[in-house]
Length: 136
Image 1 (cartoon, one colour):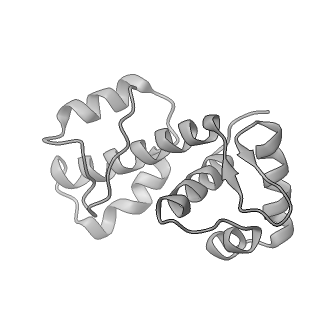
Image 2: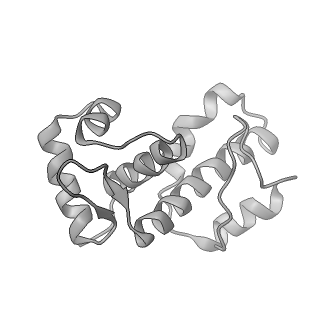
């Protein structure tokens, strides 16, 4: 099954909720994504098939090792782009999130290595969140 923006968004959200020590459920994902519970359930089935997510009745949704790796990459790309837009390009912090949401899906390791090289620091984004260490 193919990786898509939507799948990356789900995996990223699960990762971020787990970062915040929140229990991840269909209801939580439905509310955060603004989609129906049945849509979440259908996507989770795809993510389970891709071995990115583990689900069990009455248990929190959890990322597999492969899911964590995918999520860390997407989160790192997003946060690096936000830092780049603020530090290098002079964007305001309030303007960078929608741009980073689009750019995080680009599959170009050389591009993200270059972004990382151009930053003064690559540990935290402009909002103070840590940037996962990824070897692009």
